[in-house]
Image (tube, rainbow over all chains, first blue to last red; front, side, top):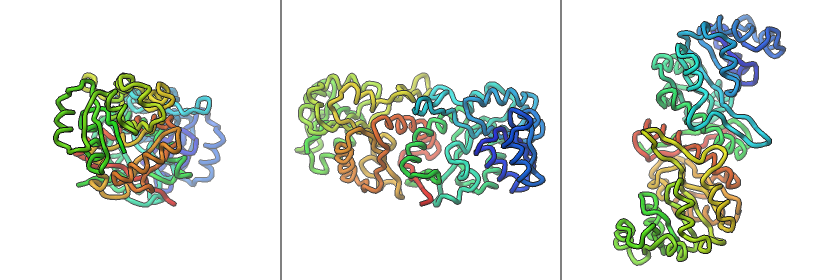
Length: 217
Length: 217
């Protein structure tokens, strides 16, 4: 499968690297054609790895992964080009958080989410929110954390969620640990979990953790 | 110990009932002196149980439990009387959510929380946020749910958090499963978890669940 991974930060490079390792072809997209992190990643990641602008990556990918910060997602996806998103699965792993004067702030929040913003702006893309509730190393290697901890998917398109669930399976998340929360509106719930994730991160002292939903029956 | 439990809904009556069962004296507080639910609860719950107005309950209690909805908490606590809260541990278990035209809405959110609002309005009360991340039956009987799932505490007063941790121990939460998130500001994190709780509730189909933080080391 051909993937576009938009964003050259830790999240983007980690996801792109895992996808290449799994035998997929990946173009890592960035704002400029000669982004140093993207060039270095492509040069060191073997024949399945390439780099390009957001638009070049999106044109190449059969599946698009949004791995830029949630606050710049719409700008980046517009640069990628609506025509390169149409009909494709668009996996959004972002969180719209920033530290402002030392305080964590989340925006949009509560009455909206990045997942919904993207689906509204690109109605022909098949947006699925997932993976944003764990650190990027856990995203692609859930066995770093013991137990039957889970990952969530949100989206309006059932077949897109199935396709993402299969991809999560390649990453190491068995289907019974993929919890379908419902439509893309439920992206609010997983994005609003981030402040608790950060609180847990401070308590645990490292990012190799996740939550496991325990239930009576 | 003498407790005031403010609020005669499921949460208030469940907490009050457990406290009486544990041998404490409890006044269940409500807006009016003759609230039918409070009268019935007191009549059927044995000699440790009584009922009264918010102010009568708060005057009686050495510890105050806020079990009304988060959106009316300040109004209720003003009715209880600041002089009856001074220096006391005030355990806030509330969530500021309402269904508005079928949509869950949370307010305050992100830049504030009910826990912080209460601490600001009553600076001499020793506010601890806890228990709002589980259903009331799980609050007082965590063994309903299998596993080492946890409960959170947030608050600025360390000794108040210790006292609440001891109370949680009486409810069945061993100290190693009580996670201290930090100051009362972290009440934001647990209040913002509610949309995810509701999403999980819809998926699980009943409220006997909780999350267990799993970690690598």
